[in-house]
Picture 1: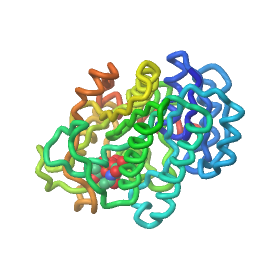
Picture 2: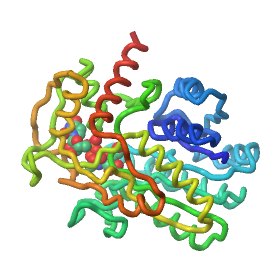
Picture 3: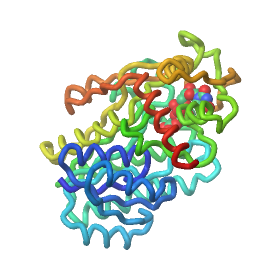
Length: 339
Ligand code: UD1
């Protein structure tokens, strides 16, 4: 299949492109490089052993998008990653989040309609569940309004896509609700490239171990969890990438369907357990201190993965130690490139 991947040079996008080729598919990448680097393209091409068509384009540019679809017609499916994702920034610049994540999505859907695309996989987030009353969460756990424009943009996007798919004959859509993607490709040639001070846990850990940050702050030790720190379902980014391939292949066999899947491991880990795993798997000692809770953080969430296992036949296979060690290997490779 020829799959158009928006945001294909980003963290999850680039790993998904690599997995698409590994499974015998081809990708066409659209990325505006706003939160990614052009250098990812040659690294990816090297990894997959062929040239990959690439268009530097903002998805808000509807005419530009139409030109790409015209040029690449016919496209067998779209995996739509391109979106803004910094939770705190969304509180400062809500309009940018609604423009990118909603108007951008509508522009993609317009191309689905104009160019008869049959399959769409959308990047959603477990943020749509908020702090659930019960864990683990299944896909029928009620979704809830978020306290941030980022979270609400994912919820609104899901609603738009669900309704559109039901009304528009010929399109099938899968929404993947990601838990916490971490780690990097085993080759250490692609990985996460945070701009500025990382807001997420894993890049902050690796940058601290590399000496770029002085100390990791562990946000909160008074949660009602086994060691008092918050629990998340960390998933290896290559496992997550593989779920996209399974989703787009499944859609080929199931036209016109609309489905939601949790994509996690099914196990929750505390912040301290992630730190222990990092120290164990890399032999690095991490400098950290426990501070107060971060505003807006939830206490605990992890996925019930029964549905994705049964329907897509997908299951995460990589361990937490593989996540932390691959993230470190990538950080070291990045540092080596820079020096
Ligand atoms: C965050 C977003 C989520 C979004 C995801 C995108 C919030 C509340 N949630 O998820 O909506 O989909 O990013 O990547 O912002 N932690 C520390 N110290 C740090 C950084 C994090 O202790 O320096 C802790 C956090 O308190 C949390 C865990 O590590 O318990 C994971 O944090 P993070 O990686 O930021 O992900 P989420 O908050 O789960």
